[in-house]
Length: 188
Image (cartoon, rainbow, N blue to C red; front, side):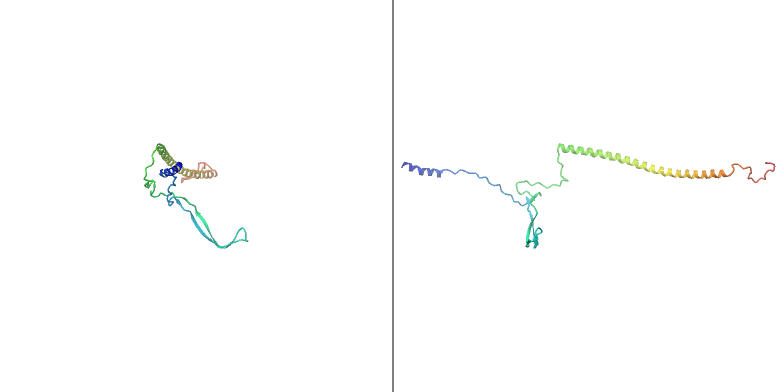
């Protein structure tokens, strides 16, 4: 009988112990999906009766066809900070200072050097172009003067040729004198 006294003691000891804390993994709180993703866009189309294009023995009754016009996608537009993220002030990139590190400074300096070289070459090229334009204008002027001189020389040559051909028809010297004095009868 002594064993029967022990059984209630077991029940009392089971009731007097503190329950162990059981940790269950909790789901993280689901953020509000508004502002994170755009919802898909559905459009309903009413279709009247029509014959099946693949089998003309089948006719479809009028019904509504739903089409997904645009799938869901991420919303990349910044939102005001309402959760864990700190609010970043929106800055105009034109007034924001450029980020500075050694590689960016090296690239900026190389771009400045390249720009200075290009500007120097552009000035040299402009000066050479101006000289070329001056020489071209001088060449045009010289060509016009050469053409005028050539035409003058050709005209003189033609007149000289005409004069020589006229001289070939007349005797080179004549004995007659063309003066107002009477001819001397004794001269031959």
